[in-house]
Image (tube, rainbow, N blue to C red; front, side, top):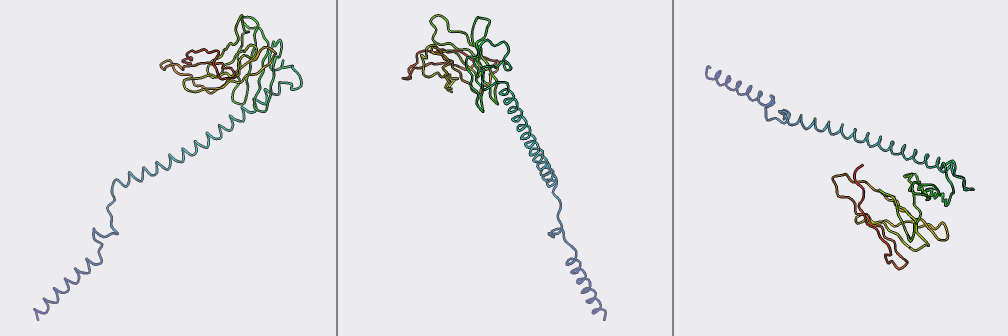
Length: 235
């Protein structure tokens, strides 16, 4: 009897142990995971990345709106300038003060070109104005002197000058390895003006200056006149 009781007791204990292991999750159970500290860092990084992306997109949107506002202001300013020029007369006194004579005028949807005769420090000369939505520039041009057949003035992306008796068919301005072809406009029987406008970023004082060369050519592409000089630094 005692032997049967002992066997029954042992069997009950074994049954209870089996039930315990079957119904109690083990450490290796897939439902029980020990959290890796690196997971917190990954989650934090992910959240920070999402926030940075949102900030970036918001900044991009603000920059687009700002650019659109600037472009609109430039357009309005350009239209405002054109409004001061009477298309049916040579009166540009609302645009220029103390103008002696308007020599040349060209007004299009995208550009204003004015050449006026005026008094300069060195004597009589001209003032050339080139205006658009992006720029509003002018150069004072000196008269051609003695045996000069061409001259030039300007700096930093805007060069211009006069040509005597249409001596040249083409003028180029080279900046290092880039070439810019000038516009040539005849405004009298024996004289023309030329100009070129291009994007330019002035170098710092610690950099090597740009190598600039102006060449004037005849109809055969032969260089009849040239001038080389260094670009400005600083500013």
